[in-house]
Length: 288
Image (cartoon, rainbow, N blue to C red; front, side, top):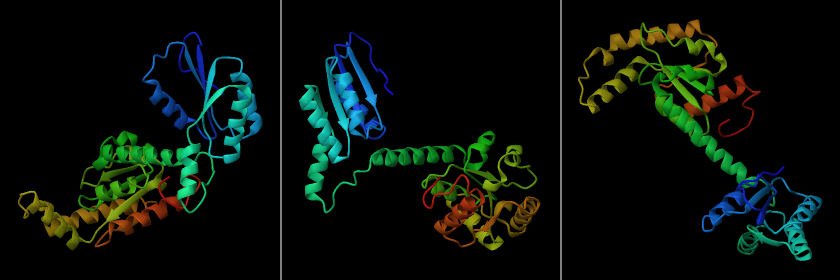
């Protein structure tokens, strides 16, 4: 239940109490402590403290040593109880959230939700999304195929079928996405067939649209737009090769991205992944 984060002669013990994870209190304490010598200091963190009996037990421990109690608690009643216990026991306490919550209550139209752990939930989603973005960028265009099993979604398709922009868009919603290019006569990575086939999605496009996209891409890059890469005959062969792969792997849902908005395709991909793997992705919105 508690962990020491400093060694010394125990000249001061800081009890950090939170009705959530305790990370907010811990970070604020550490930010303040950079101004001081920490010899003889202990920090003991108590998380998920939500009852008066839990608070009373902590004060009993704090009363036996030279201590300071710091807390982040959203419940008004519990904050008042901690303040009362502090006065009765003589253990000094610092309320890190109370003052701010009181001012917000006076200036905003509604009272605080008083639901413990909300900040951590928001914080956790933020870091999960950052992790998803980093994963997706690393695994663009078939790189690190050995890590495909770690992806939430795997996009398969020809060059210029929106694999990268779609991957990045989905990653901003919290999905770890890897994309694998289909190149004629080059086998797809073996790891692709060893991972959960339910998270693989195929992308396809009409030949005329692909030729136009590739030509515009070549012109923008200052390259010759008349080569095989953007020739209709060559593009048709590539598309047929890609379709043949999809026919051999019928478990992969295939989406036609021709003149389709990125957001629309992303929504369809999310929906099919959630329906295919409901035991893992059963929340209604955002990434996993």
